[in-house]
Image (cartoon, rainbow, N blue to C red; front, top):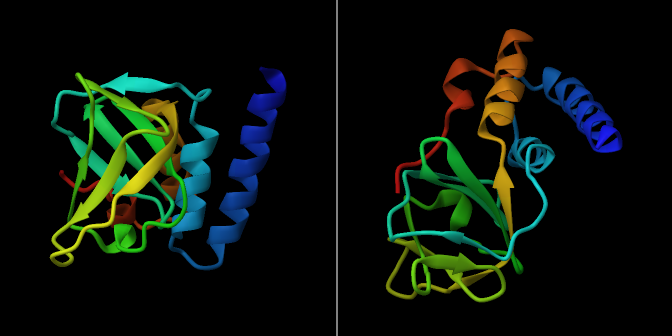
Length: 154
């Protein structure tokens, strides 16, 4: 556990240095924050058809909130090209649960054909840790206030 905490601190420190020059956090940097605050992979999570919000983290991952303080990092099995620009998504589920390697994310509103993006891995997120890391960046002046909470209602 100490190794993981130390690795997370090193990651956050390096990310702070990386985005200090640009003043804007990139998708890769945001994904690194979420990965640093993610638990061990789980097979599934409970889902009853409604997301509180979601955040694209590049074309191969996203975070979904099932409740205000319950979120999951979904790593996809390959690129989901429209995800970074999506205004809406759906997540498939079976009997009230979303399963890794079985369920899919679909980007809505980009055209008539939606390509399903298979969920490769599910990891629970420490939402307080994410907020703390983002607040630390904001205090350091590396992230503009409006970039901190870019969740998208889904």
